[in-house]
Image 1 (cartoon, rainbow, N blue to C red):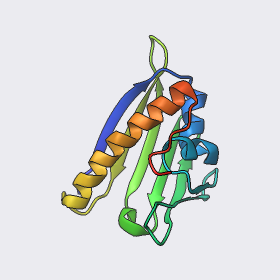
Image 2: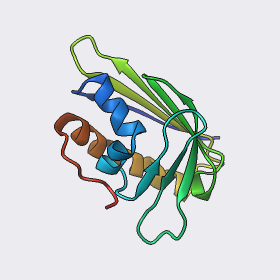
Image 3: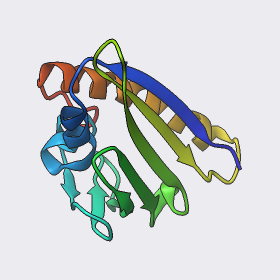
Length: 138
């Protein structure tokens, strides 16, 4: 099964990046403005997108200060796993390492999600570094 794997350096504190990926205010700041984000293992992330009739639901399967793992429950991410890891950079800031694993094929949908994550992480970096919300879907 193909995986999407990427990383980027963010000039922000680890707590700031953690809040951006794991809280409702944070996710609404860079990903989609229409999101309901639970916190802690077992909670749900529900992400809504323009023109999509049903929320994409993910379940938190791991969560601590430096790691967040979400498992897709429905939609095109059903059965996939997203892992975010926040690592310190000696020069300052953090490295956000991301893997979206478990795609059934390297098809057009997979290619579109690969591009989408790259674009969304540009928005995440900007949000974490500036605090200015500019969700990709809003």
